[in-house]
Image (cartoon, rainbow, N blue to C red; front, side, top):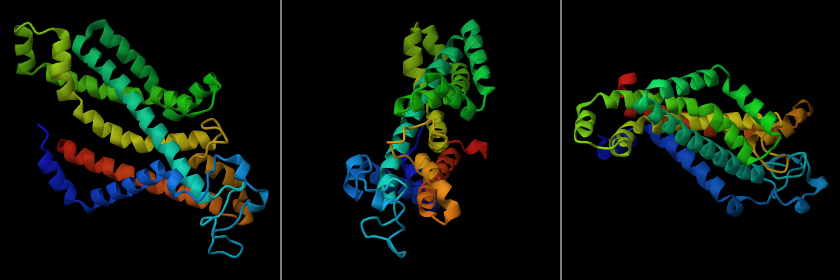
Length: 289
C-alpha cells in the first residue's frame, strides 16, 4: 500500500528531487501564465516589426530592454516565444502521455485479464509497433495525416508510446491475477467488470505513473524534434523546436541567441523531468536497483 507520509519524507530529504520539482514547477507556472509574464504576444503578427529582427540580448551592444533575450528572424522576442513555446511543450507532452497512458492501460488490462487470442492479438500488434523507432513512426504518421498542429502531433506520439503502458499493465495484471484475493472474488461470483475496476486496476496502475513521469521528457524532446524538422507545429505557433530550427541557420553569423536560449530551456526542462522521474522510479520500485 502506498505510504504518503513516507513518500513525502523521502522527497523532502532528497535535494535532487526537490530541486528538480522546483524547476519543473517554475517552468510550468511560467508556461501557464505566459500572457502575464511575456513582454509581448508572439501570436500577434500585427505587432511584429522587421526592424526588430535578430536584435541581441539587452546586455549586448544594440540590445533593447523591450527584448531581454533578443529577437528571432521574425522580430519576435525570444523570452516571449520561449514562454509560449513551453506552453506548447507541456500541452503536447501531457496530452500525448495521457492518451498513451489510457489506451495502453486499457489494452494491457484486457490482454492480461482475458488472455487467449485477444492477448495474442494485442501482443502481436505491440511487437509490430516496437519494431519501429518512435521518432520514425511518429514522422510516418504525421506524413500520412498531412496536417500540422497540436492534435495531430499528440495523436502521432501517443500512437508510438502506448505499447510501453500496455506491456507494463499486462505484466501487473498477470501478477495480481494469481493472488488469493482475486481468486476469492471469482469464487464469490464477482463479475469481470467488478474484478477489473474494483481490484485489478487500482492495484496495477501505480507503476504506470512512474512510466508516465519518465516518458514526459522523451515526448517533449520528440515534439521539439518534429517541430525542428518542420512536421510538428505550424510556423505561426511558437515552440522550442521551431525556435531552434528558425535560429540555427544564423549560428555561422555569430547570431547565437535565437538557438542558445530555447535549447537551454529545453535541456533544463527535460533534465528536471528525467531526474524527478528517476527518483520516482527508485522510490516506487526499489527492487529495480
